[in-house]
Every structure is written in C-alpha cells, then in structure tokens.
Length: 331
Image 1 (cartoon, rainbow, N blue to C red):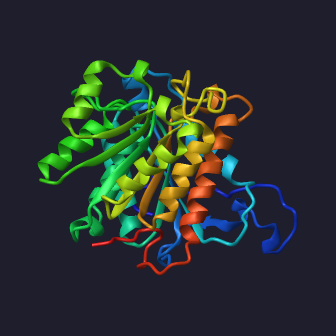
Image 2: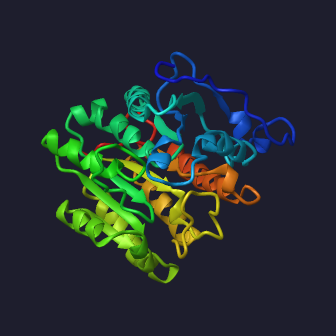
C-alpha cells in the first residue's frame, strides 16, 4: 500500500489440519489487497527505535513488529475473521518525524476505507503517528469527536523541543489546541515514582484524566471500569494505545522500562474488553516491545493475547454499525 516501506511476508504457525475448526491467525491473515472490502482488521508495523533513543531509553523496539507477528501467528481463532497485513513503515536513520507522518497517512487511508487498524510498534513514539491517523480521518473531518486512552506507566507529556517516545501526548494536545478542538486524553496505570511533579502538573493543567497504578488493582476493578466507561461516553471514536510497560515486570520484562509494580493483566484485559465492546474503537497500537530484553517471549505472547482479544471482539460484534471495522460514531 502507499506509505509503507516493507511488504508483508508470509505468516507461519502450527498446522493442525484444514477446516475452520483448526483456524489460527497465520492462516487467517492475508496481504492487504489493493481494493479490500471495508470492515476488515488491518495490521500495520512501525519499526522505530529513534524515539526511545532520544528519550534515553534502551533501544530495540524496532524489532517489535516482527516479534508480535510471530506471537500472533499460532493463536487459535474461535471463529473466522477477515484480517490483512499492510506491511511496515520503517524509520530511516534518525528521521523520526517523517516516519510518524507516513505512519499517520497510512493509518488514515485505512480508517477512511472502513477498517479497524492495529499498529504494531515500535517505541511509544508510534503514538503520535497513530494519533495523526485518526485525527486526519474523514470521521473527524465530519465532526466526530475522538479520544485517546493510554495504558501506560508514564504520562509521556514532556515538552521537549525534539519529539521522542516521551513527548507524543503533549504533541497531540498542542496540535489539537492549534486546530481549536478539545483534546480528550485519559491514561490508566500511571506510576507516581516514574513521573515528576511537573508532569502531574502538566496533566492537571491540560485537564487530562488519569488513574494511578495503585488504583488499578483487581480489588478496584469496578473503579477501573467506571473510569473507562465514563471516558468512552465522552467520545465518538477511540484510539487505544497500550505501552507494555504498564504491566508488571514479571509479565512484561521485554520493555525499555520494566514496571516495579504495574497493572495486573486481568485488569488490562478488562479495559480492552470494554473498549472492544463499545463499537467506538478506530485504532489500536501496542508499543515498547523489545525482543532483545524479553524472557521466553513472555512480553510478546502477552501483547499478542491482548491484540487477539481486542481485535476479534471488535470484528465480531453483532450489532449494526457503519461500514467500518469497529468505528461507530454516535453523533
């Protein structure tokens, strides 16, 4: 497709025999055709380390898309889904900004064609490109209001002059203000020791909603559900971004900054279920997988499960919706 640099390669996985009763992701995924009927899921990779490098983190996330595909491939499907692979956008050298704009253009093209987009990162600098994909879509141009829900231990609201994996949500807020639009950003899983008082003040000044990791426990699942559903009620479209460092280090060791505490996997999964069931999901991305730091592919497998659950639920919702893979504007 336009804007991607690397064509998709063949997926592989365990073969239990023919028939849909043995269906796995690797048999369901096909290369994105030139004229794909709307309503499909489309995977798009973003190979980038530059944002993490600029943020003084541990590089290696550029290999994340390939690792996520390997982890997704063998997962069994309960029912057939229509899903395509569009290939990868590659950040060439240090030109992160150009890569983000090309990623955004590719995502917009897919959203406007009526697909549910899943972007496989890459460092969390992927978020600004993902945001551009939604913000420049025909839905938003027609007046749909979108929000960003971030599952993350960090606000990523730094005001640095040079964009990095620590700046994307500040960049979004600034751009939305320039366009005269309200920016609805909520983040779940914030680790207080990992965010300075200045970042908390910035979040408060910008009117952003957040829950600390201390409050994102299984015992407080009702509070987490209320936080998410209240946020969903304020938007027509949603962009969900999952920074894998929101999870405990024992579950997600393969990230640049493993969490000392983290949000339990069952809580994160419940958030994904609520988003997928809302009919408002336009785009999902998963960021910060660093295969070189992973242990027994633990992080990749966890991320694949979250993608699997969110995408299959979104694509198999039974209620009527417009010609889009999960997008259901309410206005």
